[in-house]
Image (cartoon, rainbow, N blue to C red; front, side):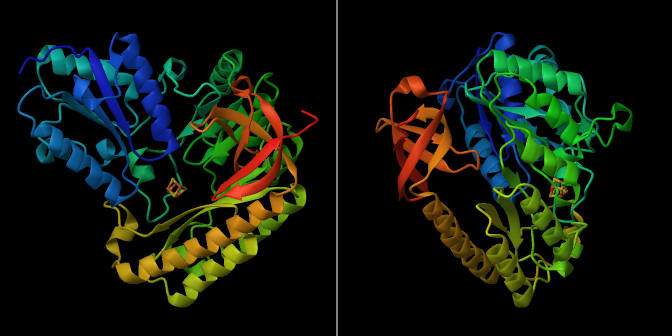
Length: 441
Ligand code: SF4
């Protein structure tokens, strides 16, 4: 069937920050092609679903949504599926969802325009899902919603092959982005007034290992980026504990723009479970690194990801996870119950922990996390802290974050948006710290 070139598009993003950045790039590409982004799906001639395969629930949501749109008898938009689900399901998506017009994998975003042309001019379904990342992706085209904080991709893919994770299969092997390209993008962002960048990758601290001839590893990259004027804060996501090096710790301690917050995902507290997860470190090795990091960066805050109910995890092993949490006192934690993912080694094992037990473990861990996070906030009361002001909320409060990722609100003029302010904290409102402008500002 011959289709009309769409004039408007709606894009829905699921999953991680990598997907958010890919969405910004696709929005930029489509805008350059003359299409207009709309935020009401009923006005869209084309709908894109930039999907995630990490959780079964995320996939089911997308399938349900596309099924719903497919049932429209009038004005059915062009439907495209991009992201990890496109990579994981490939052609089978056309079978399961016959109204999908194109499928574009995580490594093929560069081809969005060509794929759309094929759908329109040739009147056929189109698919691109190559395993290898196409390095000619134009990152500079990204159209960002935020004017203060930006994501910057530095490496794509992952070579670690944790047994529960689909990412190495959906995003392929690690490919670092050339240093000069990253510097050019960060300089451009600084010129546009951005104050904070978050360097993104499935495993940012593997940066440069796939390109030994560059002689530039992750900590080297940080020194280059810190030297760019105008960027006040640099963060990075996600790291693998095995690649958190002493050099990286010294960079965090030394470089003014590097925030003292490290996402240090342990995933489980038992060395036996870690081995089964193929995390390639033991609990003891993890603790050694954390101790070294705390010695080199004494004011560091730590974040983590934890999966509970991994196949064969016993109650005692889960208690080890609770114990690790109590000892390390993470300030930020992303906590999940295990769910098997097709195509992963763990899929071969019996998912032998009942949902009831998984949920019970998750809630115990969440309760512990909430009480520790509340303690962290209490400790900050009656101190002054640097806040990057991001926006004003509907009640007139300015909202921002500390270097260690704590949410802060305070009263002040909108002209302070985009600036760093010293805020005196006096109370908490749920998970948000409340303060007032410090008098010496
Ligand atoms: S390091 Fe992260 S992205 Fe890579 S396989 Fe493990 S969990 Fe997945």
